[in-house]
Image (cartoon, rainbow, N blue to C red; front, side):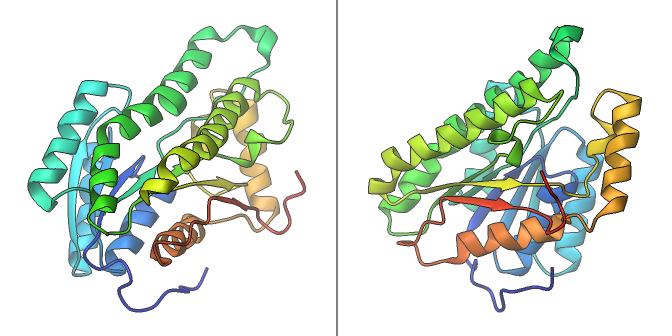
Length: 258
């Protein structure tokens, strides 16, 4: 996607992005920085985070890498405290960490079920718990404040062998709707982005070699979304005037049928 935003509409903002070592999270961090935000990237892979920080700083931006497993609640709180010490309270949280593992329910891949629940649900809640006070304080000071959660088109579509993953994404989409009702009156914007097929590391992490090959083939068959497409979309959501909340955006590749 060619850049739609110009100038520095995120100037002065402090953006925290989970799942930011690659893919959509890394692309969003780099784009937010170009648009003026100070960015904090969270993920487990420190060396990949350092690469993101290097690219941001080479482009003239400000960035901080914090290696953290978002399923560790105490560690996420420590990260939130480090953000406040370095840049001040965050006012833009892109809650993006997640994993997809494909299996039929009768295969009883219980450990895989739990991994998705732990990261996609508990990890998301840990980020909200640690950074929501930042957002509410920023909003109370008259600043924009955004919580943007990454869901998926799987939240609303019936896709085979994705029952647990889809269930976690349905949780995220519904939670976001509920939080918007609670936090909107406090001027905290709450939104979800539901992407279709995105060219990320997904084929390498689905847990099944045949499925990995199938997804990789699909990624080659159609013009799928790129991380930059999601980054520009999320940046646009955050750059709007603070009284405007794009609360739920579904983004498909044009050629994706399901």
